[in-house]
Length: 336
Image (cartoon, rainbow, N blue to C red; front, side):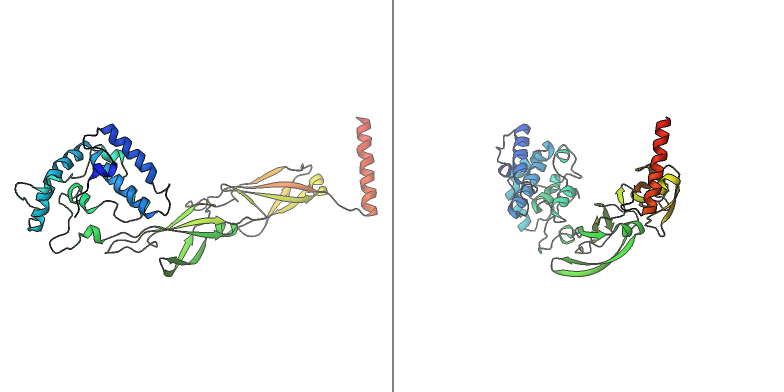
């Protein structure tokens, strides 16, 4: 197990004050952050080292123990070779270096182990050296005399996976079960997933335990389905509400009547059109929009916008009637 020179990692002197250490950490973290260096394994490794170094020397309590440890490192290393294990060797007891939960200021300033795993998957973000002296277990997490790794290093929870899934608006309305073929690191498998009614475009559906398989008895990760909903010519969706355009003859708009409104749930709705309905008038059909996810029986609304359909061609008889109507309308105008 190699001794880690955290001062060298951050490029600061051992006499550096807290402000200088923080400035060095911020500068290097920005430079090597995975978001700035996508798919760069060396930058990823460097970022882990920087965060680990600041986790220790950026915390006054941990830094104090680390500085005391430095002068005793060779003694401790020799004691381990001689079979000293986790006990005392020449007055040096390594158990004093454990943090027992690691409070202090450092945890509020650096990334936690969980946050590091969010960036790098479930690979352990800290080195063996760090766990040996700054773990929260109360005992050093080290390789024993036989070279056997700790249970923590053997067991790895599976990573979460994300997979796109395209649905029609009708599928999103009703909910659907899909069989997916997943490919991960050269392995393929199929999984049946249930998409609940009411999902929206861009939402993520979690399928528990269907992510990457864990190792060493650890649990598997989760599968997240990123929903992509194809456009629908009949509807425009706004949240859980649906908007549709309903074309009616001009005579229906003038005299009144009925019109059909499309319906994702089955047969078209029969909408009553009052006499004198204006072009562009909107009617609300309460509770006939998209289902609300996780709320059985609750739906958004359906809004129908009336579009009066003017005739493109007239028969002779129709023209005579329109001309008579025009004269009538003109007479009303003159009388007014």
